[in-house]
Amino acid sequence: MYQNANGIAYLPLFDGAEERICEMLKQIEQGQRVQMCAIGNFTEAQFVEINRLRHGIGLHPLENNEVLFVGRHIYSSRSRDGYLISDIVMQISSALSPDSIPIISPRMTCIQNPDARSDGYGNKVHDRAVFEMTARKPKAELFSVIPKGDDNKPIYAKSPPQG
Image 1 (cartoon, one colour):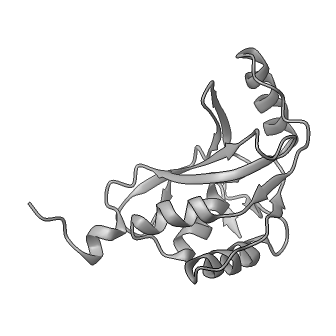
Image 2 (cartoon, rainbow, N blue to C red):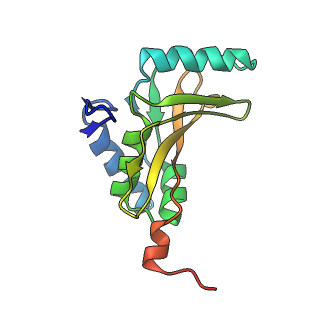
Image 3 (cartoon, rainbow, N blue to C red):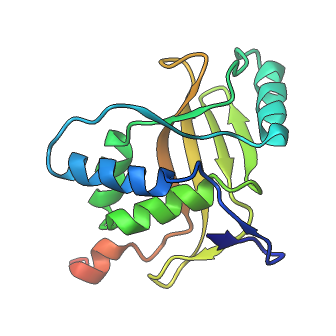
């Protein structure tokens, strides 16, 4: 459970989703294939705003308010930066906060947590969830998560940069 800037506790995902995400990421780490699963929904306000902004730039609306997860790309990109599975789960949970704000462009649909979070590596980050909106149409697939502001990546804590 997490708290927003106002101290209000929330669960950003379906019950049990964090555990399922963790299991799936461990399977991916071991080279196994995983099955896609639903992990949550956007809030009604997020869903309406995503569709309003997408319509405004000529993109198809999101027809189903369900967030799907596979995790291969997320694991690959975040583990390359040195993040642990527990870090990745925290990034996903934070990015999918009910407080997260839609960010839409012709090339991407995202939501970003406006509340900075201490990431344990000396950064205050704003976690951003990036969605793939066409391959699983009419649903959104959580394609990537980005801890915006992670200047001190954990990979450097393990192996300092040369130069």
